[in-house]
Image (cartoon, rainbow, N blue to C red):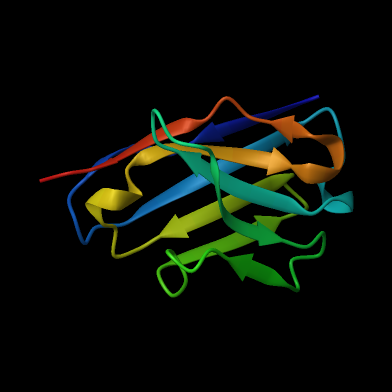
Length: 113
């Protein structure tokens, strides 16, 4: 049972990235899934969440209107589309299944010119 994030990298301010989270060993469609992020030296913070069927989403105020969480249950995948990126979005981004207390290892996003 694991989550594997991918898609991080270096992007200029104003740019876009799409993160992916692949679920292995369980049926992710049964669970609410979330994205969190963490800057070194700071607490991990909530970014976005989606219900099991993808019908309802919720976002941190800091990313609302810029980030979009989505999922493809047929592929056991969750995505985070990040637009209009800012330097303060720089962090390690983690996928989480709250119902299983399961975390991925994270993917680093760096927003810098």
